[in-house]
Image (cartoon, rainbow, N blue to C red; front, top):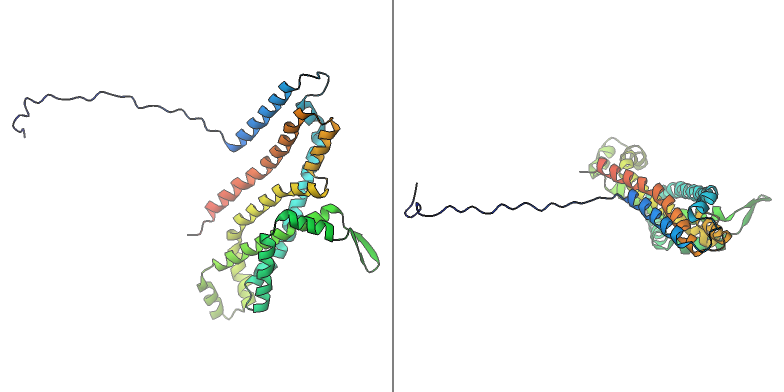
Length: 280
């Protein structure tokens, strides 16, 4: 229906404007790490022009890569053993936190808080310098090399963190599970081992993997106390090549890339498990 004066009102057409297009290039973390490593290699190669007879940074890495990768494998071995020992001890400590026996729960809480909040490097120094290099059991001398003591030093904070993971996972189970088990005449131990812990596995797995990734990256601290792992061997390779400044970034960048390529898939897998096992 037309109103008065609407016949003389001219039609207005707004000008057409093209929506601005934005071109975005997304680079994943893996591609970014490899790109940064290549840039460091190119920059170091371009800078090292004063001595053409010397090996380029890429040639140095290729030459020493078997030794460096052997050191990296030693880092992984330390992290796996520390995670194994820490998980076994942390499971017992976590059950101690849930105990109804007050003195046991108090001692477990004290150990958990102490080792969970203590700096890893300080714990490593304590283990390395306070534990003897050998022990005698029934007239049998058992050597304790530095890498074993370092493994124990890393296992202590793992134990405390795993204990908290266990405690949190068990507490997240609905209380009706305890009531149902009690109605079926299950003891507390049977309820814990047969009902609660099997349900907690999927809840504990993502944070457990996060702890392992932290342990794997923290094993480089063992180089400070003299363990011949990847970072120690990288410093030795740098010294063997004359301490050339242009080799510093490529050699340590190679170590960084190795740890990134190992830990980043663990991070992706952890995120995937968190989405899959999300508790609703």
